[in-house]
Amino acid sequence: MLERDYQLDQNRIAEYFPLQTSIEGMLNIFEQLFGLVFVELKRKDRDAISESGKGEDIVWHPEVHVYSVWDDQSEGDGFVGYLYLDLHPRDGKYGHAANFNLQPGFITENGTRRYPATALVCNFSKPTPKKPSLLKHDEVVTLFHELGHGIHDLVSKTIYSRFHGTSTVRDFVEAPSQMLENWCWTPSQIKSLSKHWSHLTPEYKQAWEASAKDGNQQPSESIPDDLIQSIVSTRHVNDALFNLRQLHFGIFDMTVHETSSHADIEKLDASTTYNSLHGPEALGNGYDWGNGQATFGHLIGGYDAGYYGYLSSQVYSTDMFYSVFKKDPMNGKEGRRYRHTVLEKGGSQDEMETLKEFLGREPSTEAFYKELGVA
Image (cartoon, rainbow, N blue to C red; front, side):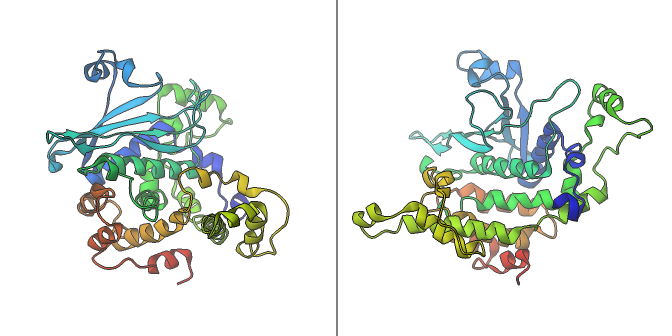
């Protein structure tokens, strides 16, 4: 449907988002917004910080990249933490995209600070001598989202590790990352993240020329405006179905966790409950077969009795973006205010108080409904 109705050529778009270029572009955005500096650690640098003196001991696989993260000059040049990037698939590895806190930050008994370490884990195809790893736009959005969790981990400053970074209430935890997804739908930022793979190296240019049809000119270095427009035009395709699906999952999650007694739990038929709830949310009559709840991994993955948090966080993230960043997404002054007012506090302050402090008012659903096109 995206190709038929919106002329969205996913393969052509992916040619403008080589993995490494996209990551560098994202880190550059975070540097400008939050006053950070990312420094990739190579062999000697890794040796210097390894307790054994061997840099390979601080990573779990040779393909893992490590960055030391610092405040820029305007923020005092202080050390922030470590960012690990584990980007490609291999046997036995976690099969999805996620960010994992490796070490929370906190204040030790003697008053010194323990610095955080966080890992972005993905499964993007490996580059080859003839072609780099290329991302579809939805993969760019996913990368930005998960890296957003990593930034939350890195810049958080709390006394206790229990409240560090993403250790917030479930209602709020996705909001910072969901808000950052908006940069992937902003034309100026889409262009800044892009670079056609044939412009990366002379070898890739030769590989592109060898695969191109006779007479084809080398594509522009940055993604053309018509492709950007085709991306932006698809942002809200199937939004209604997506949100109804989220409601279905959230209502099922709360239903199975709100039984009043052990006897009620024993009598509960999970399949019947799941299927019957699916009717209204899917604009149909539901169905009485199948065990769809068995594929609902979040139910036993830390989101039990809290899956609704994805939608509640979306309300807060949209409110923050519309109110502060929509007119000027790269406003460094507001980015730093967001860093210190929201991200830095982790879960150490009531999240509603944090939102009120940042927004200057009570959170509102108005921006969320406007984004859905129903306000």
